[in-house]
Amino acid sequence: MSGQGVREAVLLKLSDGRFHSGQDLALALGITRTAVWKHVKGLEKGLGLTISAIRGRGYRLTAPLELFDDNRIRAELSGASKASLDALSVVQVVDSTNSCASADLPLQSQRAKVWLAEMQTAGRGRRGRKWVSSFGENLYLSLAWRFDLAMNDLAGLSLVAGVVVAESLQRLGLEGHTLKWPNDILFDGRKLCGILIEASGEAGGPATAVIGIGVNFRIPADQGELIDQPWMDLQQAGAPSVSRNRMAGMLIDGLINACQTYATQRLSPFLNRWNRFDQMRDREVLLLRGGQVNTGIYRGITTSGALLLDEISGRREYHAGEVSLRVRGPV
Image (cartoon, rainbow, N blue to C red; front, side):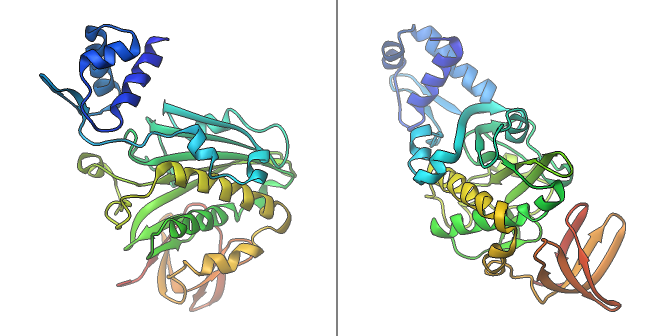
């Protein structure tokens, strides 16, 4: 077993949050107690984990971790989704799952490749925002899907992904979360999940979309201070027992299903599902575009994914891009 493999094995042993003596770890992994100590220090330094070391009791993570497990994730997939999944890669640390997925695109249409990471060192959100990523606490997932569609036809995909995330959270017991055009999931007006779509291919098709999803399960206080916008996590939202593996499987299953539907029917089948979570509809909003601010009444979305805004001059459509939507006044 390589050094990295041993370190991952030490982490797996400690992930239950219980004490494990250095002697027991050494015997189980076939290494010395000194080597165990070195790997523990490597986990603390490399992954930012806090591991207690108490004489006579051993080593223990300050809180248990539910590490991603390939088999538990696949157990959530339907037979049809399993048949459409070319690869599921679960890794500890990457720069970003979207970068990994973009370098490992499916070669055939109607096929998916998925990347999941315990931690990202360069996670990013829409408009270049940094996505704060701590080890083993949240969910960072990217799914790449090849469409026989033109690039412009993928414009509504971020809304579709939002519907999949919102419905998955609801199935897991969360209530009160909402969708914000074009691709945020909010709870109590604060960001709980984000979506980043990156497309590539020929203008007239085929085109491949990388759908990146970040879900805040638990944000440590020190990490929360680095976030430049109001945020929420599932622990604060009253859903601390949601399984990361179950949610990962549900998202993959839902996204594959949604991509298959979108490939032939575009956004239309998802509009009513979006509207169920859209609580900004018929409110007065501010639409920020660069240095320009437009005000009006938000009237929902079109079948192409554009935002409808009733302004003084009349109704206008706005498409996602460098656009930000905010409710004017109290929500």
